[in-house]
Image (cartoon, rainbow, N blue to C red; front, side, top):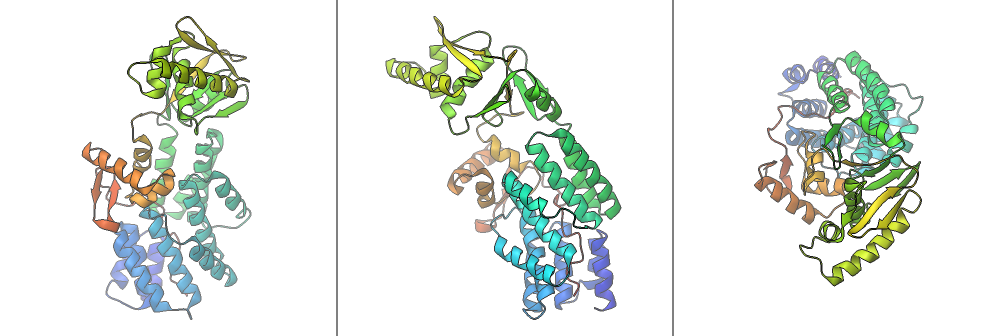
Length: 406
């Protein structure tokens, strides 16, 4: 490798993409193309970065298998940064295997961490945890230790384990500072701010109150029956009753929980659960059926009793009933939650992350654009959506190692 390529690779490893470009901007050989692609990715021009890395992979060809594998990993990370989650995971696994066979353990670990980040973004926590366990004991450079800490913290945050998340973020912060990569330091700082931001609201007959994640964790561990509108479940006495697949039952238990210790009229329950403005006999008959199903689902943690006016919810062993709601509730709140990360999402990636059809997600995005809550750019397959204003730099962890070295 010549001196300019070596200097550019070192500049990228130190998080200095402009310094790398000054050395290789006018070169079109395979190593220079790869370095230019990584530099453009770190600067946020992901479309141009992907084109350059693909050109580099073709230029290296199958004979330079290690360099080609590193380009595959670079392209996968650029796709992840642009929230194109449909990229080929088998290709990434094959590239990782090639690097492991040739002793490039750092970039092989980087490929594994990238695949785990994709699993975490899609909400596959168990699979992400299993994949992360395979890296136990593997020595990692500072930048990859920071990524590892962010992944551990992300899993812990999804599972409402703030102690583990804080410890992992502290390790990630030290590793990011050691790496001296400013984008990585900023990524860790953003993750740490999430611990202090409102994670839910406590709602009920009294005034609403925002809650941090550690406060949510404390409430769920307390002697209270919690109706969790963030995950559509009921927590009580060490028992979890999932109701995500039973929206009518959850609407009923939430309405009853918000009114506790008072009852709720039958008309109010019909309006909340079925969306009917007025209740007729068919609605009342359906309400009786759904209340019976709810009693069966909650029998170990709560009682649903009939009153003169309607129904009331009472805990069996808990001291109180509380309702946890999302910080912001609206029709397309789940899509907005993903878009708040500052990245530009495609509708196909959002559909994967939300577990919905692409057409359903497209309608939600169109509604949010009309409401002025998000903005779009590009056309056709290149169209992306994000929260305004458009950030000046990418917020994802991009390419911490000098990938194109032979």
